[in-house]
Length: 234
Ligand SMILES: [Zn+2]
Image 1 (cartoon, helix red, strand yellow):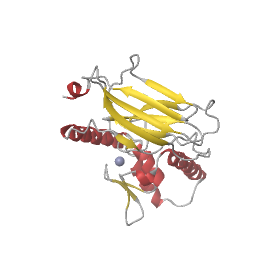
Image 2 (image 1 turned 135 degrees about the vertical axis):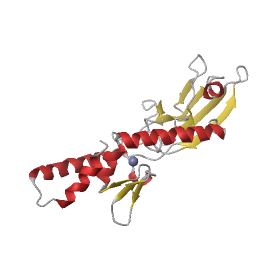
Image 3 (image 1 turned 120 degrees about the vertical axis):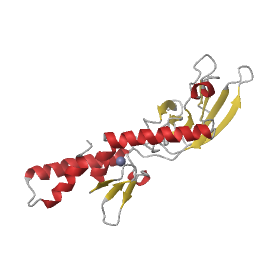
Image 4 (image 1 turned 60 degrees about the horizontal axis):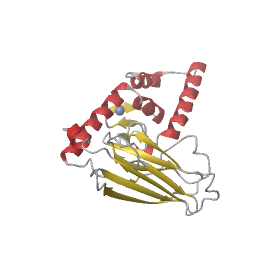
C-alpha cells in the first residue's frame, strides 16, 4: 500500500494505452466512484489540491496524481497510522482542556450508501437536555426528536444505534473521546448526536426509549456509568 503513489507517478512516461492500462483505469474509476459515495472529499481536511493540479496529503506530505490515488492512499498504512497518531494527540489535548464532558449538538446525518438514493424529507426537530440522576449522581442525557410529518407513526418507529468514532466517516480525523448516537426514521434523515465515549449504564430504568405515536415524538434517556470517566483517563 505504501508505495502505490510512487508507482502511479511512473506511468507518466508511458506511451500508448494498453488494454491492461485501460481496465486498470476503469477499475480505478469504479473504486473512485465507490469511495466518493462514502467519503466526502470536500470535508477531508488533509486533501489539498496544489497549483499543478495534483493532490497532496497534508498529513503525510505525499503527492498524488488524482483523487482516486489519494483515496487509495487514505486506506493505506501510512495514512491510517498518521490519523491514529493525530487522534491520540487531539484526545490528549482535549483531556488537558477538560473537554471530554462536552456534549456537541446535532452534527450531520451519517452517510449511508444504502439509504442515499431514497427521498428524504429533512431532519427531525430535536431537543437535548443534560441532568444528573438525583440518587446516583450519574450524568444523564435526554434526547427528544420530533417527527411531525410522519404519515404512519405506528409502523414507522424510530430506531437508534451507537456508532464509534472510527466507524463514522463524517468527521475526520476520528476523535476517540466521542461516540455517536444515531436515530433513524424514514423518510426523515438519520441524525447523529456526538456524545462522550464513556460507558453507558444499561441497567433497569437507566436506558429508556419511548415512542409517542400521537405526538410523533421519540425520547431516549441514557445515563453514563459514574466514576468511569475521570478515573480511567488519568
Ligand atoms: Zn496521508
